[in-house]
Length: 159
Image (cartoon, rainbow, N blue to C red; front, top):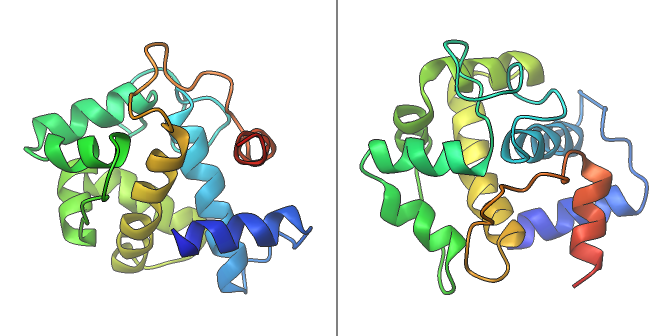
């Protein structure tokens, strides 16, 4: 979990998360988008809230689990939620599960190519889901109140 831990450490120590010309800034922005995506679509991360839509927005962890299950990769996301080793996912597999619209939206917001965005997201998403489901279960009501990086950092600090 080194990438996420080091990124969270950098954010907690006050590095600028909007420095688009630095890799760490892009990763911080991606982390913010991922957290917003998992927090029931709140916080303006990927799309416009609510449930899944034609624009590729997700409405939370439940929608993400549903997309993985429908895409035949329920066991992969299940490993991220459950205890034990996180199963890997490639950028191409993630693009197939989430759709090119969602990956394209992330890429455009971060100034990355589609492949770079998918690759970086494939490294970050398993770690974030794993950290946000510490008891090995997806919360029934979704992640709800975790809508921004500050809430995420508070959640990690509480452990």
